Image (cartoon, rainbow, N blue to C red; front, top):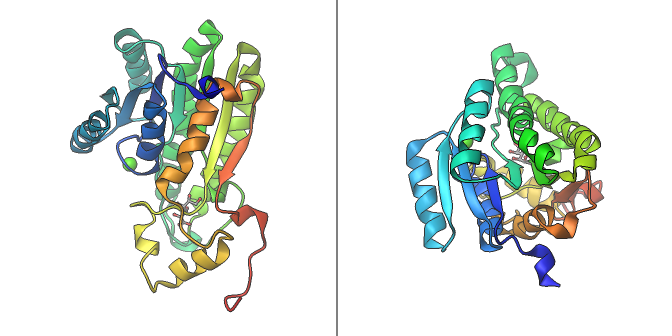
Length: 261
Ligand code: GCO
Ligand code: CA
């Protein structure tokens, strides 16, 4: 039975896999047997990340490229397919956030978030998808967000991008399911990472708000994503197409409750 989840012999490309949730998911996929191909943009972070993966006994190689640059991505994917071998699993995880109220947000900032969080997954999927379509096999996982479903003050560009990424997921699933490519998403709730560090400070009103707003009454631990990442990477999900699995401690299940309950 456990064979269904076995990723031995597979290769997984994880964008932004040098830190944060991307690294946690990549580690799970690696421990399930896949060889990791890690994308990042900082050579220092890449070195540390590869050391960490290898310390856990995971086979990992790194490729530095910018997910928003069509030509760099095309060249990198061609190179990876030649040097590292066919990409069986793609996790579109690289993303940024800017927390700025709408009236103060420059158009350039808005565009940059859309570029990295939405156009990036399109570009990488397009170049990896070309190979997957030829092989008639592949798994693509787009990392969505609570903001694929809900708004929040100051994260307007991020919400627009992550809402778009949810629909990109459904559309890619629509076009590519017939090639035996499963395209799905993971929507993490509120997780303890570097990205949320500024709003996770003890005593910070947002920290108390999130714990109250989450039925599980805690921040997610990056390892809470491991099982879902392995499931969507494996044969266990071979007829699952266009779904976003929200791993959120129940946030989307509820309207929430007053602060004193
Ligand atoms: C915020 C947070 C979120 C999370 C996450 C939620 O400012 O509200 O940073 O955007 O990072 O994506 O699912
Ligand atoms: Ca980054």
